[in-house]
Image: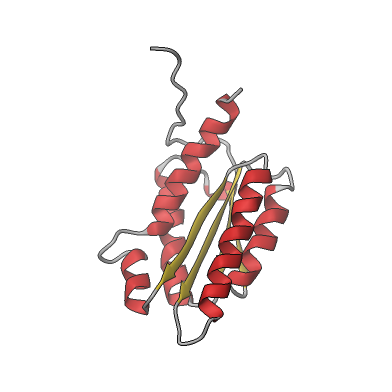
Length: 155
C-alpha cells in the first residue's frame, strides 16, 4: 500500500552531540549514562559522541542551536532536569527551554531530540532517570538515532 519510510536503530559513522545540564546533576548524570549506553548499544563509536556540559537548562537551547548548525553532527540530544519548586521559575524555564528547543528542531537540518525532564518532584525525576520509569536519556537517544537514519531518506 504505497511506500513506507522508516529509520533504523543502528549507527555507523554518524556523529552525535549531547548537551547536558550540570544543574540537578544527580539526575542529569544518570540521563547521560543512559544516553551513552544506548549510543554504544546501537553501534555508535565512542569517538563519534561529543558531550557538552552547560550550567543549567536555560543554556541548553543556545548550545543545541550552535551544534545543530555547525555541520559537524548528524544529530543533537538535549538532556536536563527541571524540578518544580515553590516559585514560577520552573514554569518560565520549562516553557522557554521547550519552545526554544522546538524552534531549533524545526529549523535545523539535523534532528534534535528533547530529553529535558519537567517533573514535580526529585523522586519523579529520579524515576525517569533510570529507576522505576526507565531511563529517558536512553529513550531519547534511541529516538534521535532513528531520526538520524530517517531524515536522509525523506524527499
